Amino acid sequence: MQNLEEENRVLRARIAQLERATTSRADPLLQALLEHSTPFLSVVDTHGRFLATGRTSPNFGSVIGRSILEFIPAEEHERIRTALAQVVATGKAVSYENQGYGEDGTPGHVYLVRAAPVFDAENVVAVVLVPIDITERVRLERSLAERTHSLQLAVEATQLGMWRWDLRTNVVDWDERVLEIVGASKPPSFEDFLELVHPDDRDRLKTIFSEVLATGVYPVFEHRLAAHEGSPEKWLFASGTVVKDGDGKPAVLMGGLLDITEQKRLSGQLQRAERVEAVGQLAAGIAHNINNLLAAILPNVEYALGLVGGEAREVLTVALDASMQARGVVQSLLSLSRKTPTDGVEPAEVSTVLASVERLCRMTLPREIDLQFSSVAPGHAAMSASDLEQTVLNLVLNARDAVESSKVRRISVVARRPTPHAITLQVTDTGAGMTEEVRRRAFEPFFTTKSPHRGTGLGLANVVARVREAGGQLDCQSEVGVGSTFTLVLPSAPRPVQQERSPAPEPQPLTGHTILIVDDEPMVRRSLRRLLEHDGFTVLDAPSASEARLTLDTHGAAVDVIILDHSMPDETGVEALASLRDRSRAKIVLFSGLSPEETGAVDAVLSKPARSEEISRVLREVFAMPGARVD
Image (tube, rainbow, N blue to C red):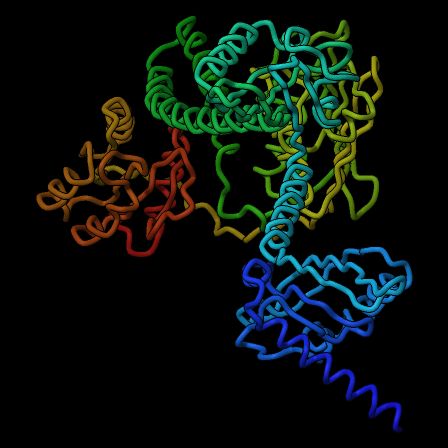
């Protein structure tokens, strides 16, 4: 106990002595050094208690006699004790980092501390602590590390390759990704790199780099690499920056390369797909116009057939047959560009669909292709007729492209019903066949092995989407040099319930009735007028809905039937229905080649173009309806 009291007395005396020495102005040079030294410059005993400080902070007051551990987080105490013990044991200075308070009293500062021994003869009696506040440096380092990490993640995510070209030494550095993109084992010189560039892009690349060296500005640009050593042609996206020397001249170029070949391919495929869609819409419009022409041709040919005989009649019969075939082709084209109201509900009769596709293919595919269609009692499939027609046609067109360069050009389409619950449809070609890699990717959207002007990569993707939507499966078997077989399996469906029709009315003369024809095509109006007047009708006509309303305002009471064109400029037939109903109690027959989904409150629909017998049948059905005037 006495020894302890003695040690405390000595310690207090030493502290007083040190405090007097600290505040003494006897040595102005030492005082100036201490006042302007790094904050918290201190002398501690071997246990870490302050013996002297260079400066005191009003935020902490006097620290003499207090432990340095009071100002350091608890998790760092052991490290500080270890550092002090090492200085005492070895007599050599050590450096360490610790967190603590700033001179203004705020926590969270980081210090780099140099701990140096103070000797009394041969023993270490104290330790000088020289702390340097490195908080800002640590913050910047952490920020830099985070940004570097983020950049690394971005580079890895985008598969960007980085490169550096020191213009002073002409040394080029590439990372592994650039080597992979270019297909090189080591960075070549700029001249060697130009040999890898597509010949059509070399001069442009030279010009770009000349401008970079002249202006110090690195632009963003794209260029191609030529195909070489089994590597296909590639598109690269290039960006970079220029580092200048002290004289403001370019010293280092650095930047990145990104392989955008796939993006370019997809972009091109999408553009071609958009063009295909536009062509499809254009084809639908052309088909509609052809329908209007056929709507004038068919009645006139049939009318002429009744006026002539002999060779002229034979000629007109051929013309009528050709017109009917043209009507079938147009209807097939229109069915591919629309969905009817029964799509997804009414199952397709497979034999009927195949007959339609066969008729269209035999008229459009090259005659040197041997087309074989067969159907073995397949029945109905759980897919709409238009979807099935589009599916089969896409498979046949794909087969057409496959056999184009083959010696034997054969395409077979076979429908079977192997089980009561499934229908199979196989499309086989004698084309070049596919490799396993191509076969696996055949159904991917935008994937194609055809030349850019021949394929969009959407045909088979469209097929598999329709098949899956119907609950079916599509498989492909192919062998290089032999050909390919696409097998479509669809669930079967029961035959649709046919509604019982009322017995057809006995044909009766329909003379004495008035019919109003509303159609914007003069040829259609003239042809229908001639045909209907020949059958004994009184015929009025109007080129538009507005003219029809004027006609009904004058003759509305006399009009029994209105044959109304669906597609007219300014106002469609469906849009005009209400105003025509307000002016007349006549039955309305919608005349359309588009099978509109919303026909409104019409009494019947007549498909355009129509033969005379079809027109007569629809008129008889209309006049047999309740409320129709038949006298």
